[in-house]
Length: 126
Picture 1: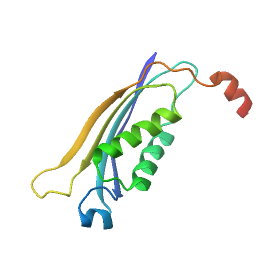
Picture 2: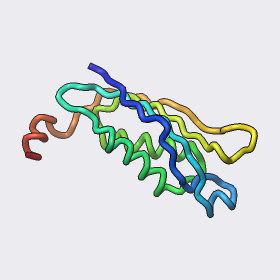
Picture 3: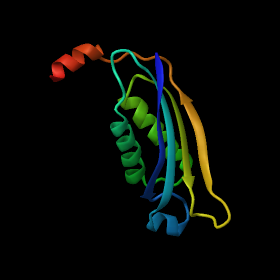
């Protein structure tokens, strides 16, 4: 069975952009994510998902929104093998006076095997 976790209205102050002032001062970044996964005997922890997104964007100091997008998608898919689709929107609401600019894209992943049976893994963690 497939489910989608949504994260909306996440706002961070991050270094992102190519202009001199963007490299020196954090600016507002708005994030919206929809992460679809295969639910069997495991679930995705939405707190961990939010933390991965935040940490990746805060630590990355990216020049381009596209680079930030790729880093976030890669970090999520590496941590959660159950993920089959990531839809992500990144916006810079304060960079222009008369509009909000951003990037939106989707990454699809084929069904991947976890390195260990998730039930076995849960039992070992207890």
